[in-house]
Length: 439
Ligand code: HEM
Image (cartoon, rainbow, N blue to C red):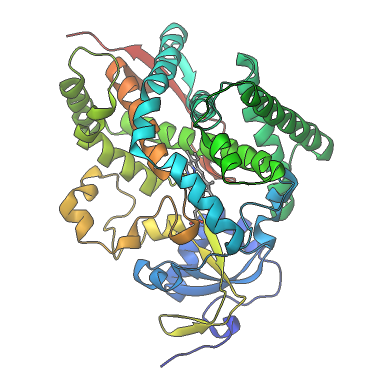
């Protein structure tokens, strides 16, 4: 028996405002979601700032009904529109998105191309590790986001950025732009319109430089070349470069940071991971591509990290036709909210959800769970095109760092997750790194 045919008939709190206040009072959207679903069940409606009434689905089996939808709600992603000239890539319609995604996957998802870039990636990771050894205390998110940006520029754009300083500048320019435009939706303080515009102009100029450098080179097999070959317009190519630079750096950077944080907090699990790294790498300082498949403990610990701290904690779709979700029929046009983080905390599939336990990802345990119980890269036709690449990057960086250093949290800091576009630790995570004794 279906209970509802409009979102207002789906269970949820009384609605008399845009929802910001309740989310702030709960201590952020994630806590709000946990409470919402604990109180109203796996399908609940709530006022989502910027999108009106949304229906949130926190059950992995019920999510299946939405897994083919290829439309994001425009209003919710409007904050990214200033970054795009040819239509917001987050929300372009399916007929433009499908061929674009095909090109993206052809370049980003292939094992041969991951392998081809691997040596360059490890060199970049080793370079950062050399600097860490000299510095002793490091800010994880800052350095690892910058490293991820260097990697994606090498990989997808066929070149590094013009100078070393520009890497840090690009990272902080993205931060300015995102906090300003996202902040407006959630009434948070940003750096101000003037600074955001300046940062955006800087990002555009950087993309133009990358494209100009690209033109000068003869033989290309990177993302830009593939987009040119597929006949995408110059404006769409510029937008893609900007979107990829953004989507690839802070997500991968925070994933690695959270893992190192959890390793420092859980010495027993860390010992298992490092023992395996030592065994697989032997006396080599960095892994080879073929080693990754043998780093089973590391892979499980990384997955468990992204369950507890998903770098992209939320997603959304717009129903393109009426859709039945459990007991409810949801009309076309409804915003469907994906609380990825709350799905990862669903106690029906994750007993003691707060506990860090990499063994949740043994093949047996994984096979016993519904497919969509673990969705750090989203789902369906709009899931992350960089998922495979991100795992390769994160694992090679982690293996390199864990082989080389012991990590201890710098004293006197409280690590607090903060939800901006990605799940950061407020004020970064400072870590003391000391070289491990060679055996
Ligand atoms: C650990 C690292 C990463 C995480 C956790 C992550 C997570 C996500 C999530 C949750 C989404 C939204 C999916 C949805 O709505 O269902 C997404 C979208 C996207 N990601 Fe990632 N991502 C990561 C790294 C990357 C990398 C390395 C790239 C590019 C090389 C990338 C490119 C994209 C793009 C282009 C989209 C938009 C997808 C579309 O609309 O078709 N991401 N990512």
